Length: 514
Image 1 (cartoon, helix red, strand yellow):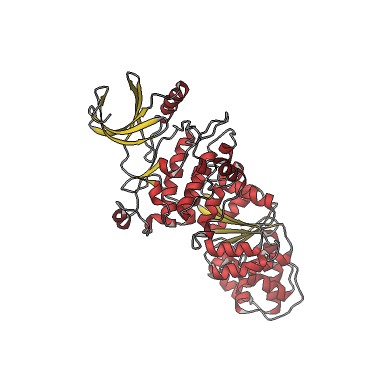
Image 2 (cartoon, one colour):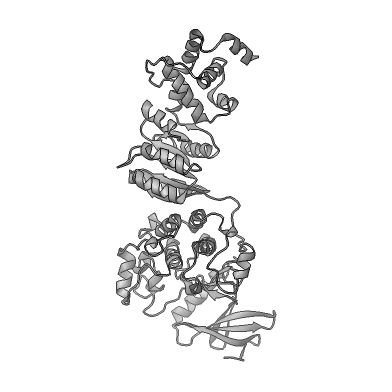
């Protein structure tokens, strides 16, 4: 075919490769003056294959995304049927196996966002693998053959027993011949990410039947067994994408992209050590061009609760919301502490009662070793002692599991803004001071006296904290101490007792009110 001209327009210049149903050539479009790729169907393919080839090509031709190979034309010359597609000058993604975590995230996000675009238009790739993805010299991903997953004898499986998809990258539902939806691509992308991060496939066997059984039944080995210094957050993202049950995977590629970005933030600003030839200089000179990059980073959350159903429900709730990504889950305090210190999320949602170490046990360590992590206690315990201990240990908020969804989301938002948040049933105990008093009569310190002076003047706790340039938690703790020392039932009773005892003076109160 080299030197031949199809339809007196496309001059065949170079042979690029062969598949079981088509041969691919580089050609020159003389009418538009540009290089293209020609996918020429082989003459032996069945009529059903030919029809499906063009039907799916017609669907995929509606896509217009910078990370997806464009389809320009469907044509034929005599008995030769062919597609005219974008010619992509680049290396196979297989050349990037393995890669540094930053590059895994950088390229993986592009793939995920391109698939999200296709999925929103009801197109599933069904054969995501490194051989079907290219990386241009500028570091831009190009997904090839999207929507063109054709039968390849003995290499792909369909519901009727024929094969569709490469065995090493098949989702469990593909391997079982079940009905597919977009989540099959999420699983396959998870395998690609695993391979890029570790240099190995999670499942491998010479026998196709054994390999398919592994895809359905066998959990993948944790990537950190192969790469000990792989970021824990990235490992968590990869393993979630590889959940056998589609319901437990990321439910959209958009959420997967956000999780990747959250796993290693600001990768566009970080030079990559494992950049491949042809664009090392580009990566060192500046960030990869990524037209789909979001301006606002997703909020990274760790969930720590030993009640699996509640934890999974909460994870599902957050991931349905825009701007949230659950980077890890823990069912006990020790795991929660280790993951928090390793990942350094934006927010830790922490239950108090868990096996082994509870939330109150790990909270001081979290605050001391990861002070930038916000901690919102989400618990069923509303006893006074739990509330006071959590606030004294540095929790940024305390809400009950019985709270409404809107109250929870509001609490998260306010905690991330730097406010101390007390949920319904908790705030009342603090603000009105119904925390059980003791009979202590220790002398008030200067801070406690000043707070009670502000209370006597009619100021609310948040205003007092601002005037005294203290955090809300410090203010409330000092107020609780003062109430405890005075044996007062509420904040106003404490202020009145302080006046009667001479701890605060009327003259000071008048001066403060002027």
